[in-house]
Amino acid sequence: MSEPEDVLGSIRETLKEEGREAAIEAIEAALKDHPEDGLLWLEAADLHLPPRSRGRPIDPDLSQCANAVRCLRSAVSFNPDLEEAWALGGLILVDHLGMMEDALEWWEEYRVLKPESPAPMIEQVAILARYGEYAAASRIMDLIVNLDQDTLTKSQKRRTADVGRSLKDALRLRQKDVFRPQDPNHPRWEKIERYRNQKPVSQTYFLFFMIAPLVFVLGFIASAALAPYGAKGQVATFLVILTAFFTMTRMSEPLFRWMNRNATDLDRALDIEMASGKVCIPENIREGRLHKSMLKYRPPAWIERHSRIVAEGQRVQRRWATGFTSQ
Image (cartoon, rainbow, N blue to C red; front, side, top):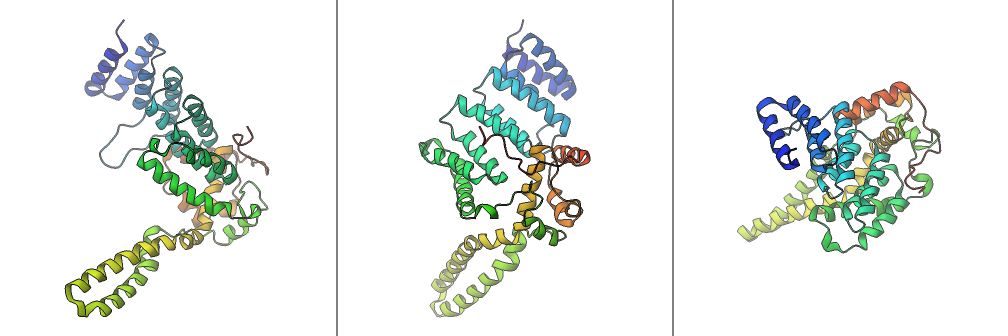
């Protein structure tokens, strides 16, 4: 019987010479001989997904995602140290399948294995914040803050800071102001219905039509005031424009969020539908341009699964809540 490392090399050669389908058949045969090899399961998951491309990535369909997750569950069960498998599984569950309840449990398993790792806690905080479960997200955020900050990568620190700011703003809201899309009588539904045909404001549009004109005016004033100073005045004008742009962009974030409140709330409703497997969005809102624009950039597996949920038409319970926070 060949060693798993040799088998992996052979499968990769098969992939190059005979294509993906032949490689999948080869790895399935190899897994019968090495059913407890985590690396083989990880390779199998990768083969079930579309090939990586240098340009725009190819999104997997629902069947490919399901096969990949099945393989990744086996990979981490036999080799819990495979961080790539944990990361890929979490990505597929949230971004491609919308199965956030499963993702919370997925990352909880990782937390049990590596309680000092910030990665699973950051992912859980992000998911709970999307639900509107800010108190639960805040409790986990406190654990992240108490960790040795040297263990966090730059991207983790940046993401923690972004989520932390959002949580801080959200915790200021009164409990009744937090949108609960599973409640059909929540007052936010009335406002979403009123603006159901209004598309969300893009970041580019906001910067170009809201921030840029103000920066231009400030730049014009600074240029006129500093013109007598020659080259130094030009440098100072450039610095004024640069500082004004970044300052106004940061200060206008609450305004941008307010302008897109309906889109953000509808996004949460979609998350609840995907997490619960049941519908909560009224049909008249579902037919509006706002809802259609929210689906525009979703991956195909997500769209396929959501279409099935909508077709079944089962209504989510009014008091539905994530099972994770009740544990």
